[in-house]
Image 1 (cartoon, rainbow, N blue to C red):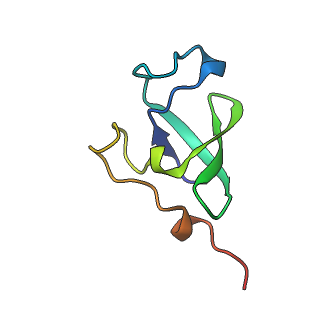
Image 2: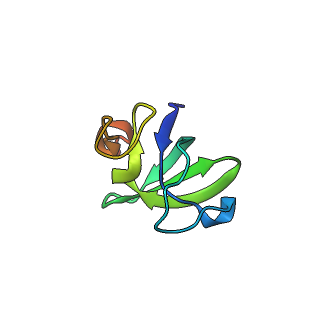
Length: 76
């Protein structure tokens, strides 16, 4: 399982929407094929836009984004 990162705010973890959230490690679980991924973050399962998932620790626009189409291979 690949370790990825996000700076997405999680209200379940005490973050305030629209405010800067800490950068956290996440573990991807699945991808809906459109734009959302289920992830585990700090022991909770959540669903976020794949565009807020990064391959390196950092913030949106400053680090490479995660490509779920390469990570989650669809069965043929």
